[in-house]
Length: 123
Image 1 (cartoon, rainbow, N blue to C red):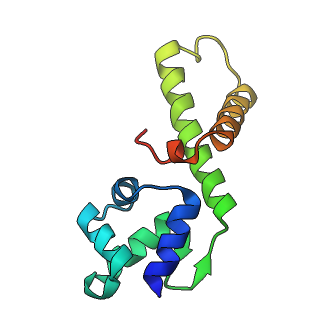
Image 2: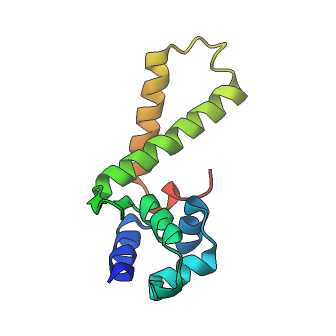
């Protein structure tokens, strides 16, 4: 039952097993086992994987797929903006906080419009 929920959610988010393992901190083999038969997997691993997928297994709360994708796109956009700011010297170019937020918003929209698997690639 839980493996069906986790697999469906993983497919809807278009996240690969290796990316899910990396983001949850759970070994890849354990994630694969969890998605097939979770009976031998420690509960803390199930919770960690569920958290990445937007599922809180302790409270049975589920975050919408769109919200999980949007949060991930914003996190990745912030990472890219910080990286660009550091390497290109945007601070010296006097980008104000509102401009910086616009950069993040545009980058997040571009990420959401593209291939969803890119959201889960390593930063």
